[in-house]
Image 1: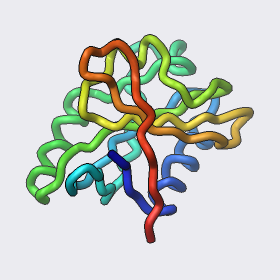
Image 2: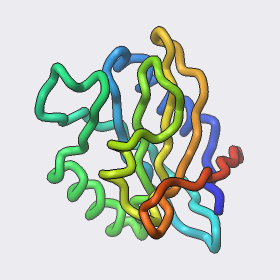
Image 3: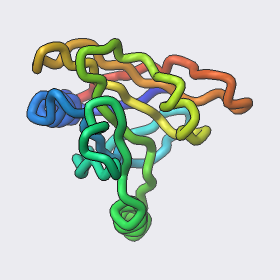
Length: 143
């Protein structure tokens, strides 16, 4: 399975992550499924709604009403929410234990490493069906 997007989609995540540094940022990945591929059609940056602003440097949350609004909009356009992205300020682009606890199977989880305000490594992950960990998901850029 691959996540397929354009370089512009990647740039949206990089720039959002850099602007939000040193806090975690987050967003929604919208598109369509085509066989084993997830074709990204839109990257939607959203506000980090984690309840305690002092913890936003290491936690993120998408507000339920925001998620529902974008899910309805995607469905109306014949699309789906394919996954989510968030940044890891000054940490590797690997899922944390907290990420695993909040994750759902079938979704893509893109993590953008931001070191000292500069976007570096970016990786996509999918949660294993038994929730024991993640598998790496290939990202393919097509223009």
